[in-house]
Image: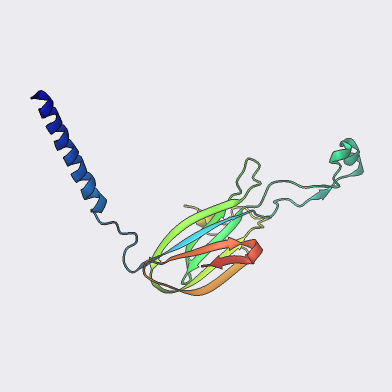
Length: 184
């Protein structure tokens, strides 16, 4: 009799577990994006220009080096930060200074951001500057509490009028080999 009660108790608990799993597999209904909204994704990896120009080595410096290391130019590894700006209908959507990755600050500056926006026709502008020699905190506007500073001319810029459907995901990518920003 005790064995039968144990099996009956197990069956009741399994049934309750299946009911809970069954309910939460269909409810509450998942809404990916609210109606009448679209999503803009800004994503890229880009290495800024070298932070310091290469300098020629003197004959004395070259003589001190082993023969296999006698490169006539000495170039630093550090890269410039990347300034990025994204505007929607003439208003800033995102603005930041992205530091290069790596222990020696010699890697790529990487970004991935999502911006929910109202569906419809919009004017989208993207700008990037990857050579910020001589500037200090030039993109301070992207940081909380920083003062607004006039941004320099950008190396890459693209504008487009885009029509975003409800639920559409619009990607803004950057590829220097393709000439700059890619809207898709």
